[in-house]
Image (cartoon, rainbow, N blue to C red; front, side, top):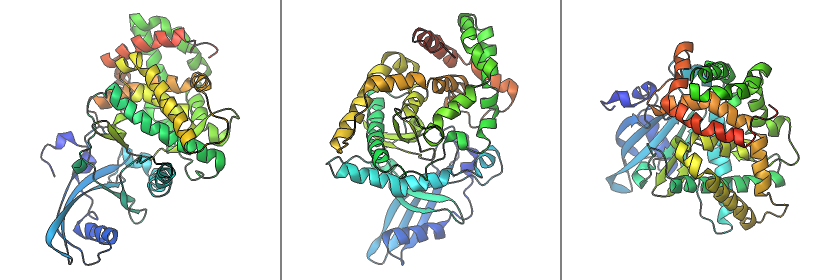
Length: 413
């Protein structure tokens, strides 16, 4: 393990006992169909930095191996993704969740089908790394090709407009294929019915339940933002912020609307869940994939993926280009029904503005917290309240709240 342990999540500094050379030999022998494969050496490292994620553990294995067909040793780098085993917040949150089953389904069934449909019309788009092994018992584990030696890397800064466009282009193609399939085979994604809101105990987390109170207190105490308190007060009086967000996320399953645009959502579309090689982007982490409103991934991206400057200056252009790619892909893959339109999509973004509210009030302070290198979700009420005074967060609000006011987001709450 590396010596600079402070750079990594604490759980990833301890390799599980089952993750050893025997395990590596078994999966490589199976993958290459060479039972006689012999592991000469294997070294394990944390595969992600502190704050990159909190829903799984990831290790990098650098493996030297030999086969009877080749006298020289070979090297391969693998990414092993598994669930937390140490008692703690992450394990408690995920023990009863379906996120691993969801991701296995995505890598083994859904993404290959999406890519096959695109290949049939000459589009060579790929959505993620190759999964070479997966298992749910005795351990929940997936093993992938390591994209780092291929020149891909996670961006540890704010993305440029061109990089964001590359990511949204890939998402648009994903959305288009899923939109067509949903209209043709409504039961195709029935297994993918778990989203962020269905994580066990997620909606009971203090950063969710206490968010609006902390947000209103902050508005009371920041002179330049004080005037917006009255606009958010109805959310507090009605107590419907969280449930309104849940209703949007689960709409396809619980209250399907005839005119809504539904797709298979990524569910957690942010910068640490993608890798870049120049302007070539590949997506990661499909644990939250679910069928829902097409607007959900885009609204999420506006607050979690875009920085304040991009959101202010480029978001309309980026969304326009995303939708243009979505429409072009639909036509390219032979979609025959009535095509969606940008005006209606924009209307649905407005109708689903409780997504915006919960992201701004509950998620954005925590996102700023993680970007500053934190590892754990804050549970202490006093420390949680302090997150609402982070300068970057307040600067964002100074830009976002006037725009929401001018667009009518606070009317009829």
